[in-house]
Image 1 (cartoon, rainbow, N blue to C red):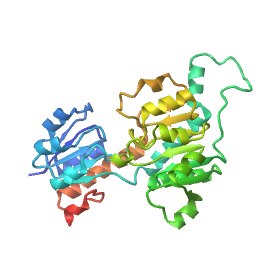
Image 2 (cartoon, rainbow, N blue to C red):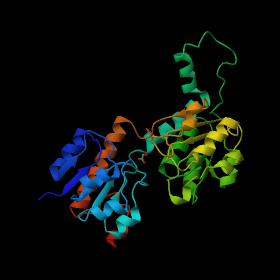
Image 3 (cartoon, rainbow, N blue to C red):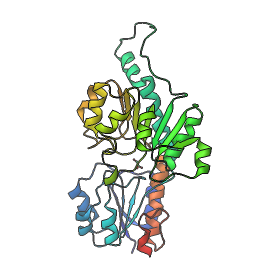
Image 4 (cartoon, rainbow, N blue to C red):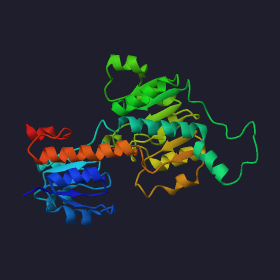
Length: 324
Ligand code: GLV
């Protein structure tokens, strides 16, 4: 008998075909978000779950899923999954690192460029029929080239963001739990800075930290106060890394100049304070959303599930301790 696997959200036809050749699949191709009870109902008899960041895999779900052996997240971030609880029940957990680095770095740059050059604000101005002619001081922005880029989190995506900065002749500083290799620093022309140094010096503060209890509100009122009044904050990693209420207050007061955001606390019910501001670019969590990358992510999650349920060690296993 084939293992039973739940696919919680819409995936691509080639992913489904591949999964169908290995598993007895139940899938939610109608793509509605499964609330916790509905998710449990569908997951309770499954050996595997292929899920997304909207699916909560917590102790309660695990208690209802005695057969579960693997949870394959279609995302690199996995804060929707209680990893420790999965490990305690010997449930493998996998994510999709690597395949989305470049697309996600591109989107961080899209936010930097849009916030600095007021791209979405300018489009709203044109859309509203307000453009009556050229003016010297019309929608003045700030330069990206030769500015200082500060990156919190210098993993693969942070490094991809830094690499792009070379083309803009930027000065790059970064802060990370551990310093990256000297060779990487040299190649990216990136200098290590303390959290406070980075906040004080960066014209663009870009966040690439995972969301964990330690990074909850990593940027709050105190950190915003330490930033330059001309600085731009970019968050395309996870909501919760920034204290959204504090950011709204800072954007209103001019503590910082602008922000570009792809992620929020309590998505998709974002703090409506953002909607009243002109100096913020708001995107609906599309960091990895290119055709090629989303297909690659779905396929990688499927491969992880196939490996895990056929007795192999999945390539992107997050709890390798299960294998001793
Ligand atoms: C997307 O947000 C991801 O973590 O892959």
